[in-house]
Each structure stands twice: as structure tokens, then as C-alpha cells.
Length: 243
Image 1 (spheres, helix red, strand yellow):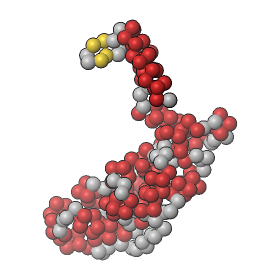
Image 2 (spheres, helix red, strand yellow; image 1 turned 45 degrees about the horizontal axis):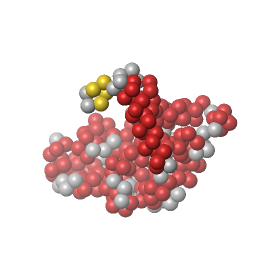
Image 3 (spheres, one colour; image 1 turned 135 degrees about the vertical axis):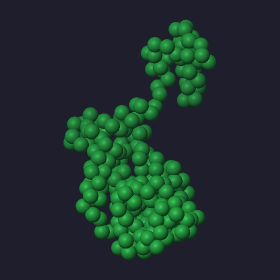
């Protein structure tokens, strides 16, 4: 992986983001209500911004505060505390892989627009892949190659200690056998539980709706039991023909 090692990672990254947004140094300083010299010193690595000022920069550049804090080479203890708390929360409640991918992207010093240019993956899709996961291994690896990791799937597999990275994506969560589940530790079971919960909350089973929902409407008309049954039979015929 091509990682930029520099005491001024934050400043270099902020300069890139400012130019991507088409802002001059003075325009940026005006928006942040500081002098041009003050913000220039931040970009040049001569000043370390406070957490409060990092928050203002994050709002202006549409960045995550935690990601900007991680780019600071000389972090204060309050900054370290925020990062540690955030990472612990993400590790416990988010999909496996999120923490590792974000850190790899930060280390690469690439902006999302640079990654989009290199990979063809939109900035919105990038965020979805990081937050919700994907079962598209080719896309995952293409994303990784854009910031210097040839086999991102393999990297995440080695870091999560979970048999299938597919658990991280919604479509693969049913790959778990009872025997595999029994061998998981508490943390892994918690991750799997949240994945299942997310899957159930984001997917609608039409047959369950027709069979168990108390009231089902179509064009503001309440469906009768006979109409529900007719719809079910039509759907069965439709999908039987597609098999």
C-alpha cells in the first residue's frame, strides 16, 4: 500500500479538499471566520487546530470529524480519547471491516473524489460499501486497489477473525451454519446479530405482508382476504415462470 508518511497529513489533505471545492485560501478563511494566515499555517502544518475548529472545517468540507482528527500527527489527549471512544463504538456495533477500511483510506491520503476517479465508484457508493458492506468481491477489491490494497477482501478476512467476510454484507449473512455459529465468541455473535437485524429491517418479505399483516392497502383500498390470496397466487405463478 502506498502510504504517505508525513507530519502534515492533515494540512496536505485539507489543501486537496479545498482545491477540489474550488475555494481559494482567502475564501476558505472567510467561511471559517479566521485570517488567511491562520488557515495557511494549518495547511502548512505549522499549527494544529483545536477540536472545535476541526468541527468547523468538517462542516465546511463535508468530512467526518473523527477522520480529520485521525489525520493529525500530534494529537492532544482529548483528541485521542475521542478517537478511542469512536473506534470502540464502531468495532462493537458496526459491520466487520468498517474500522479497517476507513483507516486504510485515511492512510492512503486520497480524497473520495480521487478514489472515485481511480475506481469509478461514486463517493456515495464508497460510503455505502464502508458502512453497510457488500458481497460484490470484485467491487470491494476495486475499491481497495484505488487506495493501494490489491486484495481488500483478503485483508478484511484476516483482520475480522470471522470465517466469511460476506457476513459483513447483507446478502451473505445466511451462510452461517449452526456449527459455525456455536464456535463464535460473544463479540462475533453480536456482530452477526446486528447484521441480521439490519437485513430484516431493510428488506420486505411480500409473502409475509400478505399473509400476516393485519391491514394491507393498495391505492388507498383495503385488500380483502380473497384479494390477498389472489395476489399471492399471481406472484407464485409469476416467479414459477421465471425459475
